[in-house]
Figure (cartoon, rainbow, N blue to C red):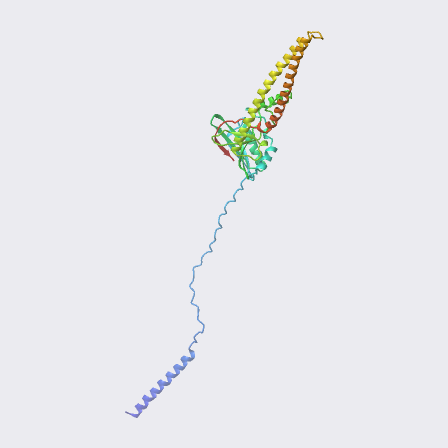
Length: 338
């Protein structure tokens, strides 16, 4: 090979080597350094939304507070035709038995006069109920039907804390009874029964299928069971029999007294026709008759003392057993309204 050609080839190789080194060197100089921190990815654009305005929940209406006083019209009428209306007190509470008795003593509804035309049992029960509720005592009204009488009755009921359900009948006295007492019960020259000072506030004893019972509250201490009424009724009937026996004995005494008085008049009339001085035989007859009349008089005086004693004892018992009220009939059904 020509030396010139060989020299040209070597020179070309050297040029290529030098140029390659320079490009490599320049590349290292201008290379952008790599960041040491990682870049966050380019965030994606979310669509711009209008803010949502949440509506407030519709407020519940404020409940209207229950009224303290409420009115309840019953399907019954009073004496004058108006509907009976119960006025209830929401704050009323159940009383104790003693609290109930105290209320009945203070309440004067029972002093109204009973009259078919103006004030009957329903009117009494309505007024007692409303008066009790006004005093803060929870009360009810009761209607009663009887198996043997189409005419019913109305009374009151209370739930006591210590004695449970208590029925009370405050129906007052009628005109006829008041007039009778105004005449007979003020007399002192006769023996009179039926004038006991019995309260017209009465505890009512009710059991379906049994007779309606009532006893004045002032003679009932703490006895509210129907069995007590049965015992009381037995004693009251026994008292009535003793009163009947008393009047039979009184009638026998009065008859004996009439005969005695008649004999005394005849004795005086007969012997007054004789002169002041009597023969012995007539004087002996006079003395015999007089002694007989005197003995009868002493016997009648003794009987009268016994009758007075019996009357006094019976009058004392009448204050208790004279306050048993006549039953209105056999209870068939009851209905309570609060």
